[in-house]
Image (cartoon, rainbow, N blue to C red; front, top):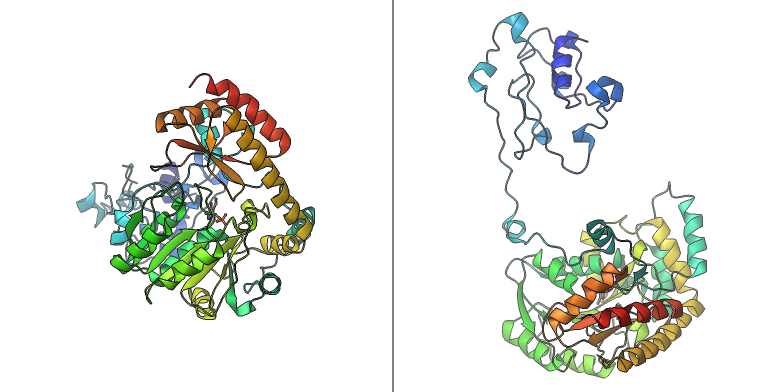
Length: 471
Ligand SMILES: Cc1ncc(COP(=O)(O)O)c(C=O)c1O
């Protein structure tokens, strides 16, 4: 290997270039030659350098090269880390490098600016996942009751369908999710043109926000309700107007009023709500709808609808209501990421313009379809969750703790104060039990526990009792 290749290699940046290509330093290189050839062959690197940073997707800082011949392409640069300059590959044999001599200092390219909205966003995400908690604490989680995942898992039919589909996952999934949408439409009594499928309610909330929210667009929601809505709306530059929980439930009257006063484009309502667990009847929701201003869309997050008593009539002729549902809860497929919108066909067509067409993978589609067709599994999960909810509420009652009425697969329990709720969370985590708590007043003195299977509930009760005497 020639000198040039060696000197680049010595920097460990994993760029190889045969020296024979360098007959003259500048102006002779063809555009093809100018493009760095990237190697990740260990044998090409000193000391068995394992993986070249530029091949790593995690935006590893890249060395900047000062010599114009050896200059790194901008996409390989980072402004974050000082790096050693690479010696000019040609100056020894051709005299001083004609360009590089004036620029011996390390050039630290400026990061191109992000959009004003992105620049303004806080570096936070709505949740710290249990995996991150394990990494942080070094303690394994034995009881995972913090994310309202189904403790009953997916339907065995769904597992079988997913296994079969995984075996042929060299093929792209159907970007139209036709079979799944057809089955959903048939079961819900709406047209296929009224269903849009996405990677969970979370993704669909973000897409719906993109339909209606520009920077400075006013939106209305409940302070402390499902935080991912806030997260995705903020990413569109929305201006938030909040209503507080009243009597530990959504205050529909105040929400409608505030939506009117602020000329909100979106009113977000989770029904049943997370984290309060409260639920409003279809009649109450219909009443709220009647009071919406013509420009306002009601985003109705029905992630927990299967656990609630009433079955709402789905009126897809109304362009002011968008319902969002998921396979993450009652269907036990949170990791598969499937959700859907039921809405006016205009909205489905609009979503088609911005959604990622292969975003719902073939395995997820097959599993969701099979799960939909397994109504027995779904009914059993609803039944068992209700039983568990009653039993868990009774347990908390024996401890003198009041549970909020819940129409979901979790229970929110008043433990008296925010510091006490935080202490309980932290001590439970030390014992391998993962739960969460509402973040905002007036519910921040509560903890939230997913309804587990009977043996999980028994284990939870045992650990909780021990923790409670210390807080
Ligand atoms: C109210 C609410 N909406 C949406 C979701 C997330 O749904 P998905 O997994 O489909 O994104 C959750 C999950 O906890 C939720 O509580």
